[in-house]
Length: 200
Ligand code: ATP
Image (cartoon, rainbow, N blue to C red; front, side):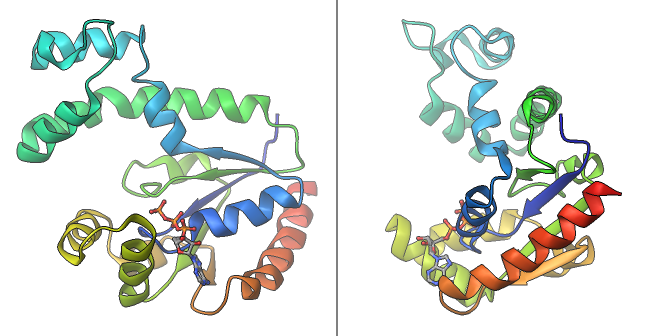
């Protein structure tokens, strides 16, 4: 169990994965909240029963798996349903994160969550690291990676916390506006800093 947890966040395409992979390569246990949000909706999880009761049995396939595409469509079209789903899953994802962190054995651990601040999960972190990039850069990288059009990426960006709000919650910031290789030095410097803080 690592007592010192660094929460890593940033907007879509800012470079969270590129940065967290570098911490992982330095031996740090990294927990990905996106995996948690999938895990709590796996077959047999209690949240599925609640979803079928609340939104209808057609949300589950014959084999009992969640129809994720249909769920996305339903909550995207209806803000109230979206809120209901968030209220259902947020504590479950929080518990999943805590369990993963309990198993972490590196000197400090890292939680990667695009919605770290929105979900309040930054409160379980000793330190918040924000990956910052210009919105035009986020847009360009995400479109290139996912083949999405500009409107799709912009609608996701609009649903996320603003860059200013994110930066206001940051203890540390990595500006990812250069090459991928340019991430190595700031990651190493922060790693040294977190090791020192965690050892206190
Ligand atoms: P998401 O929120 O969508 O999961 P993310 O914040 O994890 O995104 P990454 O997946 O790390 O972002 O980066 C988005 C894309 O941009 C990837 O294809 C990645 O390889 C690329 N990328 C990230 N940083 C840089 C950089 N400095 N130079 C060039 N390409 C980059």
